[in-house]
Length: 475
Image 1 (cartoon, helix red, strand yellow):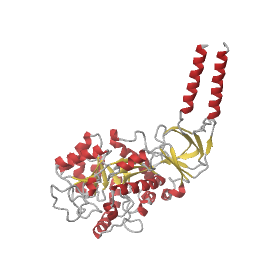
Image 2 (tube, helix red, strand yellow):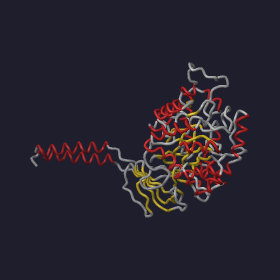
Image 3 (cartoon, one colour):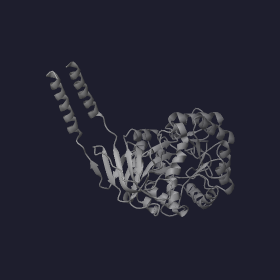
Image 4 (cartoon, one colour):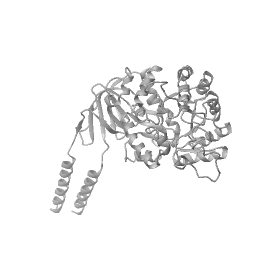
């Protein structure tokens, strides 16, 4: 009798524990045409997502047991593709004019960045490589589920020389007094000014301590900054090498803001692995990049028109006009030598322009086929950001629809391999958006099967009580 009672008590306990277990959510996409991120051919298949992973892809219909954690979505022959990745993004500076960003309180800026991160996620960008700024708080809030937004691979503060592209001090803040406190942009970790090998070594290590997955160094003149002409090479070779050497000891890499040919060549020799912008890439430099496995992170900027970047000072506007005119040549040479190329937008200081992130991807059709552009914005960008190796905060495969990969998926109303312009209007054309196995947008009717587990639990407990009673009768 005692054994029977004990067995039944254990049965009740196990039923209670079972009732408390929360099963992984399961989503089954049926009747979809899959763009897997690597092939220029769509595959008709069913795709099963379990938890945050793609569990199965089958050309034969898949069946699932009807439980309360299962959602079935009939894709109606639409295209299922990987979530988009922006390889050059600034989470903290894409929404307000430059003067307001530089003068804002860090708390206010972080709240705004979190709000605009949700807008970016709903544009279909499920992952970004943030290449400059103290985005760690926003990233942590997204990862914790406090706010919605894309995965963020943060570079943390820009590493810049005095008078470099990341030197945002005022016109009368130099010469610097050694006893003067850091300016607000440095104190809040958006940028770090460092000169000389010991100082760049220290500041690079500080960026990693803050949580950087890769380092962003200012390697040459830029557009948005006033005090550095486009033609300058920023940092000496010894300083460049020190930054790259520190990154190597952390088993990751350095991305450089740079435009001019001479600066790119020097940074390649120092060990940098990602060239951001590079509008003045020549044939010789493209060949050197290919030979050294250096990526080109390009941005399809407009020379004029409503989608051109606008600045509140004539110096930046003039520099912008110069660099954009060189883009066609840079692309020609990169294609010739098969330089690994990533897609990014670098849309800063303008919320209306940032909202056109997908439109800038669609602009790639000027130089690339829709397949080439989409592969770049999914699989290829994922390959670049995963170069951070053990610093990766999101282990798992990104940028592909593949068994075992992280479940970042878009259901597109149409075939973007035939019509790249579909990505320019995500509100209309992205019907379902999933990141990490969770659906953030669904404008289709989904079939959700609910099985009353409460009835199962009640029946099991009733059976356990029956066992007790039976045991009490001497059975």
